[in-house]
Length: 444
Image (cartoon, rainbow, N blue to C red; front, side, top):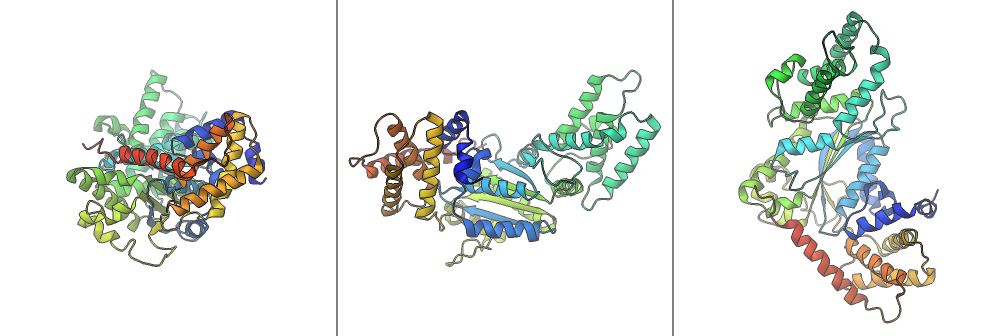
């Protein structure tokens, strides 16, 4: 099925949801393939890394560099789809006021909550994950083992559970607390109720373990029955992450891809907050030095590299990343994925613009005139290029939707269309959005 046929399959509500998200400056994750044009060189080598390095036991960190509107979040969404399709587990984390980079435990918890694995890969895996997060992962795993454990007599159940505990504990990189937590979860989920034991008590045990897996706090008294003696902290984070990776491999997945979006918000914070955030970036980078089957991507803006409040302000991090962005010539295998220096070509933007037109048509149940719209899209590209703004994909999308809105309401684009004014108006909107995004609203 080609792209036009896929677009034609959209229901009006689905198309409307896409348009409304695009107005806000983002692409709905489930519909990313409709907007995947260009960036072939970057994506080809990322795919090669996933297939021939990460899946074979490698680990690395890369930074996706682009200014506001260059398409960093969209590019990360493309990587997410690619990785899921190739059998990796993926966690896409947006760093926000609620998930600030300076609070490592909160970020780790979000990583576990956003964890996803493709329900159809691999065919011989022990489970299929429909629900996002570590909860969905362990629940699906327990369900896959239920047939062999539910209904067994107590002695037989415990014997099988002990064998599973030993098998998990022997995995490369598996921490004893993590393997005990997994075994304890199976016991809580699948063992028949004992005399005087209630379903509510059993559900409470599962909830304690859910929260522990997610990096939450639990008391020693609550964890002792499961033979768990540590909760997440910076010191043991490498072991926890290694255990998660070991478990993913055990389930049949090829590795873990972490996508950390909007790291640039750190630049606007106070020195103490910024240093704490950069220390956590360093910590995640250090995790890859001993990890296997792991790839981490951070999105940043150019200021994170060039500004005095960027990476260079924190020596422990700068010593690890000082070489990024130094080369004058593009190296598609370098640590820096520089979207700002590799904007979409005009023909790629035209392809994107025509896809947007079709989605808008489906959304509002109308038809645009093909010859006119081909010409309008080309003119928008030419104007943005002349104004030095061709790289700003978000700006381009705003133009297309604004003009489509007017055409659908009876004002088709004609000779009197002032594209320069349209672009400047949208640019002012984007600049305001950028200013609001970078304000230090969570400087605590």
